[in-house]
Length: 173
Image: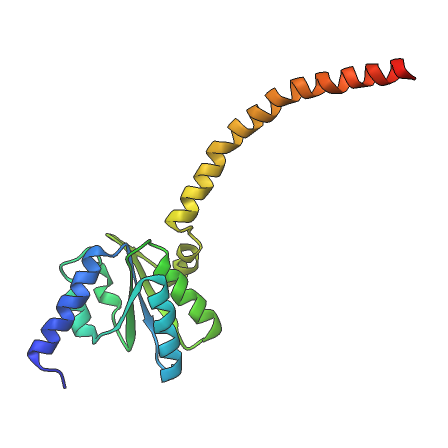
């Protein structure tokens, strides 16, 4: 049984993560083995996702002062909370990938700051590009017209060289 001090520390830690999070998910983990939970935690750690099993009353209290307070009504049963800090899609990506391999993990609620989504929105959120992927796509789109212009400008002297070479070959023959 947790002491009051331990409960306050848990609430403070979860609330602190929720303040800086870009998205939050709650998933039911009933039936997962210790090995499964360890694998989930490892993949979350690698992706920069804060993962925590918290009693629902403590989770409600921790989320009450954050932009994820609307999740409180959905916190029922054995849930694990996941917070994305690096990008809004990282927690959704970790949980949906794990849920594909293990059907005992069921995503119950997804939230962005100030916006509640359904569990069905988790795969769409997981498919969102990361910040680095979005920047590289933008750079490729910005770079394409310049490359095409350079190729077009380079084609004029290239065509002239090929024409002169063809005239030379026809005169030599």
